[in-house]
Image (cartoon, rainbow, N blue to C red; front, side, top):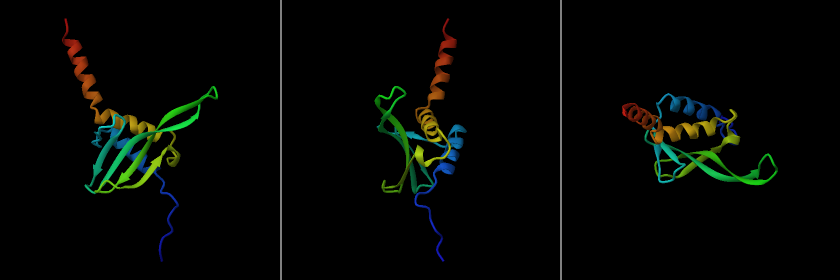
Length: 125
């Protein structure tokens, strides 16, 4: 007997765990040539890619506006996209956006750079 599968996998658990591990410094996100895209390879056969895409919506003044929204994709060892998820696929509000922000900090070594700047400022007379 085969097990029934959902139409689309629930990304919530994975995104929340990725966020927790990223904040804890355990996920080594790397930058790409695209300023808002970050990748990490887990177990050598699967790559996770965080990126943003533009969507059109309406702001609080009912004016059309483009928004950058984060996306997460799963890729195989050949770079083929196997699956992707947006915030609508994650039940925890803001989790994917927070993951994207945390991955940006890790990939660009923002915390290290801020520490270096503070240290340099402390050394000024």
